[in-house]
Length: 384
Image (cartoon, rainbow, N blue to C red):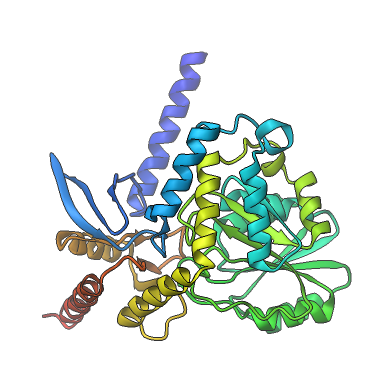
């Protein structure tokens, strides 16, 4: 019986794998031996040097001397791991220091750390998305928000992307409601209408949950008197690892007491936490302003006026996207092809992410390479 069960699972795995491959959506892990934009990827029996346009380390802080030094110091003082959850014995002074710094940075009463940004969204939405709550979620929200909504006990309405009118109509329904949205959407790099959403929430007494993971170039949001929880990550703009929620004390304290990903997960490592603390301090300094200016200049080279360092080139077909990614890799440019189900069907794309560490000449290379790909596509479509 045990052998028959194992065989049944093997057959199922083979069928599922074949189905995913047939759809052109099979994924494999590729090592990147490097840091920042520069590194090597496996190429046959050796490695190929590439310039990466695939990292979310937008300001290059993962390699900043102060950030690296803070991680080293934390390792020497507290060791590699925290040993348990925050509510047991896993909390170190550096965790509380980072929470205080995050709250001050975001202008809120309180902040609470999570081991990842994904866990932060899961924790917040399941803790406050109780029975009787109505959650309104943008259709292009990140998977962590989608899963948080699914795991909550709330009624969930998925509204058309960026459609404030739809949100307004849904908020007329009586009862406790919250609106959750990415501030900047991870696959298109476009910005949510935060000011309008916060105004709608304020008018209807709803809570706004704002995921600012990719909002490195966004101005401070105009939130008015709207009640808001600001969710963020330590692994993108800050170059470390972890997530957080910042907001009113009574809501953040409730999340600490109810969120299972907070209560039952080992605390973030001291090194990651210390690195993030140092990174926040860089971001809030004149040096941080200079890094954002450099990043903004790189975005302007590739896509003038675009609101974020995420620039998508939508190609539609999965095969076209994979082929374009391979052609760029042949030129030493690492740009991932993003396929369904990460993006909607028929919208496979190249997802280019820029960093303050990219040199102007490197951005000009990707601009030229994309122009050549576009010209090639036009030749093929005209039968040339």
